[in-house]
Image: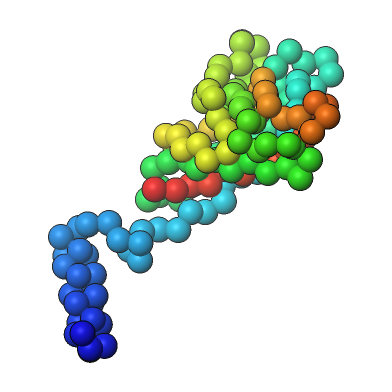
Length: 142
């Protein structure tokens, strides 16, 4: 095959995908960072569940349907072992759980909320078994 033929086929395929409304990597919106928060590897002193400060997911532009969750920590032995809940801070009532079993690579429905926090983390240990802090990044994605 010559280069012109390959370019024509690629262009034709891309154009037909756009016309038919099929997803294409070039036509999708990129993920955008919505929020980030640092969490302890266990609940804070004096707290039953809370391991982080509050963060918000309320300022997400239109056109996104999901949250993609990323976790980083230089000290954690295996980042994929970290799991946690997302709770919403309520001043009087019990704090409701918004998301469960979240970890690195999780994808959830989008919920625009304020006063969220990390709760009940598990698996955030260094190689000696000591609790280690981690950072959670929340991205709007499709």
